[in-house]
Structure formats: structure tokens, C-alpha cells
Length: 68
Image (cartoon, rainbow, N blue to C red):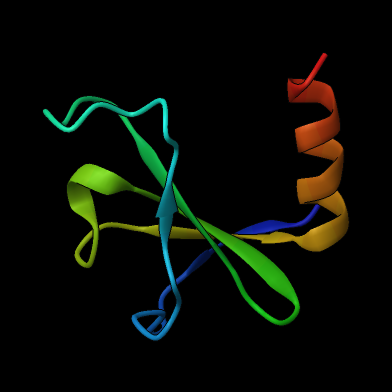
């Protein structure tokens, strides 16, 4: 599995938060799809916290397991 923390600017990505996330904050993650990878970050630290870069195949495998 290939997951790495990204240090470069990912502000140009379109981030999505789950519809299950409430509007009052809480523990949420945001996801953005890039050309070659999927990016994941903590919504409470958006823009200032770490961003993980996950390969598209690994992300698809994660979603398949999470759906079970």
C-alpha cells in the first residue's frame, strides 16, 4: 500500500465531506480526487493540517472494504 503525507500545495483540489457529517463540526475527514491519487485531510485542520495522498487502486480497495 502506498500512502504518503503531502507537503505541497493541494489548495486547487475540490474537497468533499460526507453527507453524514453534521454542520456543527465534529470528527470529519474530507476527500479530493486528483489525477493520479486521492487526497484525505482532517476537516477541522483544512488548509493547515497534514494531507494524505493515497493511490487510486488503494482507495478503491478501501471503499470496497468499508462498504461491507
